Length: 218
Ligand SMILES: C[S@@+](CC[C@H](N)C(=O)[O-])C[C@H]1O[C@@H](n2cnc3c(N)ncnc32)[C@H](O)[C@@H]1O
Image (cartoon, rainbow, N blue to C red; front, top):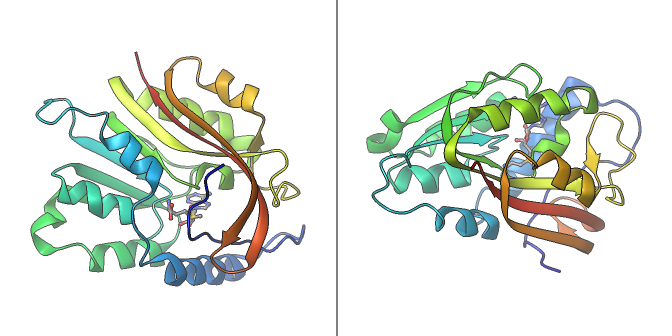
């Protein structure tokens, strides 16, 4: 069982959040996690791409938040499309990207439900896909699989059915079997299951169940 040091928390209320509440919630999250290091899953992913491979160049950071991994990819010479529904996230990312790397950064403020994904080599979606509403999840996942070039990789997290936010009707949760089934068009290179308590960024320790994967398009 592995835990990352910082995380965001979401009210466990089953009431739908207003846009304003949503924005405040995410802004508080961004302030809390802005100084964190790139995630362990990210390092596990990037080492799988061989330096000098001409196909390895274009990444999508889906639900990027303040774009900590986007900035690390830019530093390493990748071109990155960073996507998030929150304008504050993009403003933060753009203002914290060095000017010499700006030309490799593209940003889009759009929801998962509306997003159009171009062809890519790497899709990074850390702690973001579960926030896609259930009715839109499969369509989003199909877009992810279609977007990846042969040899490209997806890396990201799914929340399990015993996650503390599992009663949120507008979020999506999966069993391990469902995650594996979603990944059928891909080859799973890394699969880690976490269940336990996790220290969250805004609300202390919470029960946490998640699956983190790296999968390659054959
Ligand atoms: C927990 S944060 C994770 C941010 C970043 N990937 C990280 O690992 O720190 C989830 C992000 O997903 C974004 N998000 C949530 N629902 C979304 C949706 N329906 N469409 C697009 N982005 C969404 C939020 O704005 C937030 O920045």
